[in-house]
Image (cartoon, rainbow, N blue to C red; front, side, top):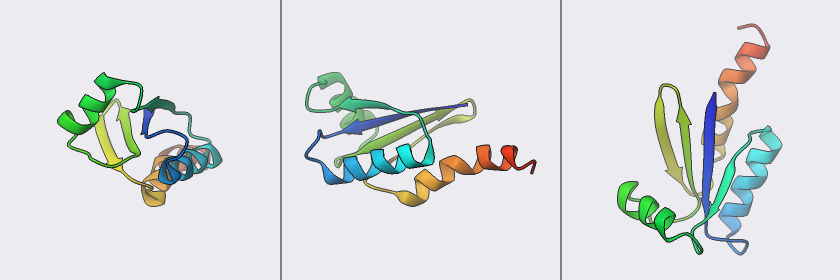
Length: 90
């Protein structure tokens, strides 16, 4: 089980839109947080995670948390691998 959060810079952010479209296409459920309207989230992303560009994607699993910034199709594809392997009986 994984919990995915996309910290977005709003509807004008092309990398944010591309990330959300890729997650949608991959069938990955996520929560979007608009950094323009959530000061606590903005502080978390910049201070705790040390990121300065959007989107920031945070993936929390039972084995830990990881994050990345920007449009990363490779990271999105990696999110589908464990569930795909289970479905295919690997």
